Amino acid sequence: MRGVERDAPIGVFDSGVGGLTVVSRLFETLPNESILYVADQAHVPYGGRDLSEIRCFALGITSALFAAGCKAVVMACNISSAVAMDAAEKEHAPLLVVGVIRYGAARATQKTRNRKIGVLTTEGTRNSGAYTQELHRIDPLLEVTEVACPQFVPLVEAGQSLSREAFDVAEAYLAPILRGEADTVILGCTHYPYLLSVLRELAPTVQFIDPAEATIEAVSLSLFQKDLLRDTPASSLLTTTGDAEAFCQKAPLFLTSREDLEFASATWNGERLILPFSSKV
Ligand code: DGL
Image (cartoon, rainbow, N blue to C red; front, side, top):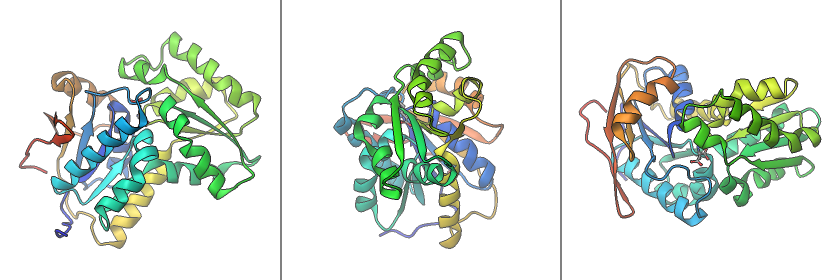
């Protein structure tokens, strides 16, 4: 195995801009770290795709990030974590691969008082059963209501998170969860934190859990324990497999302010993802 370098970037990926919620938290928690981000916008939305296809994308991106020298890879994407986490961990051990489902589920079980948990998620993640399985692994007596929200990702990618349409579809998606009296709801897709103000207005007594929070705490602890945290700040590189120009305009709107960002294209070549070389990461 190659040596892992303290100054190497942390790889993070998602199907689109949603994973920038995780990147924002990383910047807040570990401001010295350099991030190498992949938005697989050539394939967004992942949610309605075949699970074996998503597994292939997730494993291809993870391999490319490690090949680019990353010291850890965060599968910010819930559906990728649902279908590819175990295989990625096996393939890249002992390198650190972290997914959001394990930590989001654990945080929700710590927070619920009535042991009724809702999960808002994409069709693919719901069909994988990963959240319900993980929640029941922790506490078999939990009542879990998982709802697929296929209209959320296109609304967020289009910058329509606060629109009337977002409000109406959110009301419909929340209805079965509120009927089930869940006191805690997991935002089971990285795009959903952008809808938080709408969701809170519709369900003011519910605690919404963003899995990114517990995930980044775990990454931070693990890198600290391995003595792999950077001492000085560095720039970050955000790449997309889609339209780089549009991504460069849009991405900063989804991030808490951070100036030292570079943007570039990443390209699929069959099942291999080719990442651009950058001297700064
Ligand atoms: N943001 C991804 C997730 O967390 C998937 C969204 C999509 O592309 O459907 O699952």
